[in-house]
Amino acid sequence: MLELALVPFLEAAVRTATPLAFAALGELVVERSGTINLGLEGMIIAGCVGGAAAATWGGAGAGYLGAAAAGLAMALLFALFVVRLGTDQIITGTALTVLGLGVSGTWFHLAPASLGAGTAFPTTGAVALPLLSELPLVGRVLFTQAVPTYALLVAVPVLAWWMARTHAGLALRAVGESPEATAAAGLAPSRIRTVAICFGGVMGGLCGGTLVLAQVGAFNEGMSAGRGFIAIAIVVLGRWTPWGTAGAALVFGAAFALQYLVQSLGLDLPYQLFLATPYVLTLLLLASLRGRARAPAHLGRADAA
Image 1 (cartoon, rainbow, N blue to C red):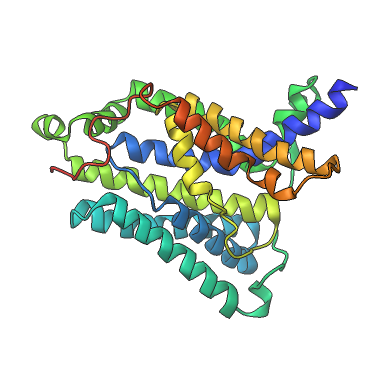
Image 2: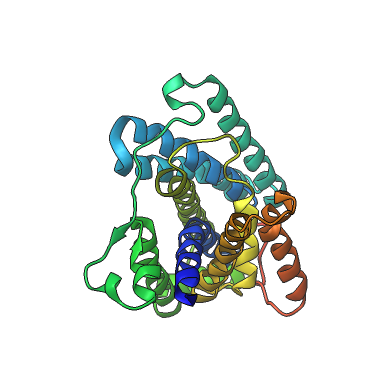
């Protein structure tokens, strides 16, 4: 009986956490380079638009490529201003979010009917992995998911290994701590930051693509729903580590899944209370971590290179 209730909940938690984990892992790399990207929300909604548009013409595979390309385009714009021109990271990121939401709203209202509200797009449904999906409990929870979830199961340990064991990963972390020392060692902090921002943009775009192509199956205005800001909180909660970030994304995925579960029980309460659950959780966790999580020393400061 417990399994009948627990397994669908955990399955939904993993499914809901997948786009959050994409965005948060990208933001993790960006912040490790010393840059805070408040434009992540704009990159996610751009990924939604790019994924939906590309999927219409080329199917789900093209949709993911379109989502990644849209996120990358926004990231290049962010890198141009922040790294090349030295503008304020907070203001630039906020402007980028406004730009992304504005462009998506315009596209939503002006696009052809085939790309408008409620239009169904080619999607990537759940794929049960042979043998693994037959494992008790964990099989259905982890191995009957859509392809993006499997990509994350590979990406998290690879990113953790890359950041801890490779020269490139150590250089990324060094830039976030002291770009001056990194430059003295013969590396180029601005180049490393640009690459990190581009990676974050691609992951943000894939977050939007996953929302459209693996979860909702349609594009709606404002469907990013603050996930970019939640992803930034997830990085803090995960203490700037890949494993911690993935675990924190799962916590927020469970919060989203919980609101669906509670609503399905038919309780006589305003549904807005359940919709607010992930955002209230964000505030509570950030408040509880105040002073206990150490950010990269150069995070949010102007590029010195």
